Structures are given as C-alpha cells and as structure tokens.
Length: 113
Image (tube, rainbow, N blue to C red; front, side, top):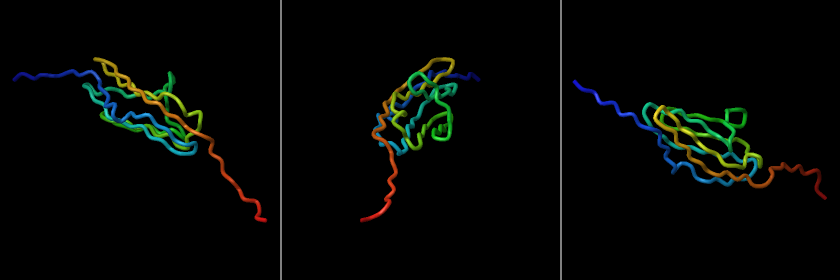
C-alpha cells in the first residue's frame, strides 16, 4: 500500500480581514480561517509588535481559525493589524486597518435648574 502525504504551505482566507472603524469604548473583532499542512501557527501583530492576550485583548483559535477581540477600544488601538500563519513549508501574512474614533467619556448630571 502506498500513502501520499501532501505538504501544504499556509493560506489565509482574507475575506475575514476587513478594515474596521469603531468608536472609542466599543469592542471590535477580527477573525478568519486559515489552512495548511502541517497545521500552521497563527500569530497576531499590530504594526511590528506581536500581540499577546491581556485584560482588554482576547485571542482564541484552533488549527483552522483564529479570532482577535479588542475590548473597550481606545484611540491608541488604531493601526494595521496582521495575522501571520507559518509552517515548515511557508509563511503567509494578511492585514487590515483598524480606526478607533473619538474619546469615550461618561457624563454625570449634577443638578437640574
């Protein structure tokens, strides 16, 4: 019996990476599917900086898809976000732009005349 093993460089479904505009204080999500064999690693970047999860930034995924969620967006979150998928047979990167508008303020009414 003969087995054929196909080794496939990563590909990213760019239809999931659309430019985003949101207001400060809102959440935004970027998610997409990718494939390759062996399963590629997926890493998120903002500009040149690799992103890691924290209180406001959530990253989840598996061997076929990934999603980045930014909670309570701030103007400083504006930038070029990219996903890089890599396996031993190649590397692919896809990008989208995120624009966060305005400042989020709460208002307290002190009294009514």
